[in-house]
Image (cartoon, rainbow, N blue to C red; front, side):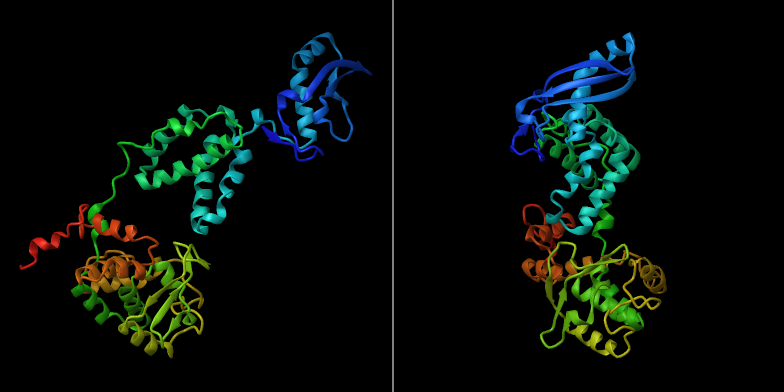
Length: 390
């Protein structure tokens, strides 16, 4: 059912009840259609409407039009009154409306990711399909093709699936379709790309961190101290301003991040997080202030004095050469966050405190990380107890 936005009566429209009668007639060598509207759907007092089809008058043409006259009359009415026929709605017609419906309830970068997924992986397959023609078999074929070609992880595919489901569910809720075919498609698969568990567990050890900090130079030394002692995300660290620091209260306010060169006035989780400033961070930043390149940004690019586009150039020009010189395995810049969290656990710091410093909305997020990385097993058992006295 559709709601007619133009007529005075706020009546729900049933497209099967609009046309009262219709006929084909000839005038000046052309074929016309004459149709009447049921009372509830009359607009601007026009109960009877006539229009030219542009088709030449002939016996064959008239017979053909008479077979199609109802659908042509209905289409004329809907088109001229800005109403979409639910039987002629394409995926592309509702995709953006569906994705934007809950835009305000998700982070900007998450929403933009959904848009990119639609444009790159969904639109080429489904956009030109009538929404009523999208069947479970089409979705299953899309899923299998995606998994075989892209080798997606389970978590990544779930986001692709969710993006398509936003659109199909929107069609179902708004009664363009009678059921959601997504409900018939299993999200499980045996061919999901398996995460590299060893890689996800890697972090810089205490000894490595000491060696790295001792040998780092200039602003990069201050940057590493900040990362290792706060555990903040790389994008958040690149968006830090001097105004985010409070040296009297020893706190840092994390309220923005950098992603793909754009400074966003929000963090990954969408919350402003006030964390403790460790003493080594306070000393390093205080000493660094006088030689800093910018009065606004703490760690800007020396070329632009604006935040780095991404951490990649820092990794290439600073981190990797330093690690190579120290014969330390490269474990990503993000591993500084893992190091902070993991060593905090090793030092028996309460998980609730670690959760606050990391900016996790839920304690379960922090717990999941440690379960995944073997610090705490799924039954809550800390396996370090096995080596407590050794």
